[in-house]
Length: 216
Image (cartoon, rainbow, N blue to C red):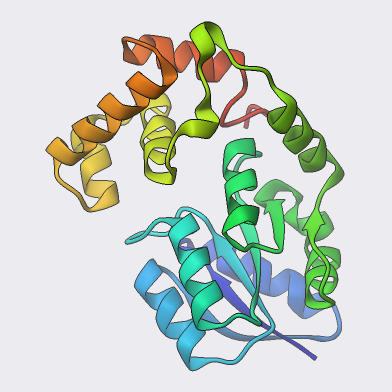
């Protein structure tokens, strides 16, 4: 029996994942969490085999969570779930210690196989995501030598939120930091991307499908 933890801030998503796993054989969901603090408490309390983790958890950075979980429970396999096929996050998630990366859109069809694979000690990535990852890893430098790979995890998160239309104040609240700190992150990413405005950042992200290659 594969013991599973589910971490997502939306109750409907947790219920949906639970339903998929309940219909299959050999799985036991032993705990759920809705925010970063809850995830760490759950991981510390419950001995499980696989954690289904949404990268966008309130109260913490998903990539940081993966690293902390790897230190706390080295044997716990992490299957990342996300709304979009974001290549940059996929690459970083695997580097942080994730064993699988799956879009929520694909979960209904691929979740059971993905959990079986990583529980058995393998890595899992869908064919579509594998193609996206290959393109991301082989993509040449962009305009004026722009390299999103050079951004820190937090700078990349700020970049994604800017592209999503969030204001500096909204980003500050979401990341639990001051607006001044967000401004610093933004200045750094502009410098690293060799761009002078939000519009240039957005144009680059759209042109290169940096965050949502599937458009949904």
